[in-house]
Image (cartoon, rainbow, N blue to C red):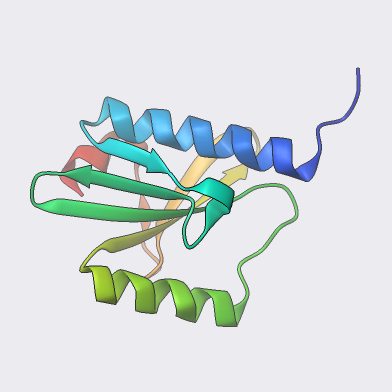
Length: 107
């Protein structure tokens, strides 16, 4: 069995997070080439932007600032999705609070 490339690992995470948001009633768009954001999740009266990070990739200070600015411009919540120990962890990038997967419908 061959190891997955970083792209494949990241894409799998994006699909997994996409499915979680869809199950919570969001319409989800996966952005081509992850620019400017990985996922745009929409529901009446609510928009959530999601940046996915898998494996050893990390969110640098400059990129975090760009994402926070993008979220402010869009009037959206910005969420960082990470894969840790085969589980998806979601964090509100604005305040650093962890989001439970069962609470996505409350976003």
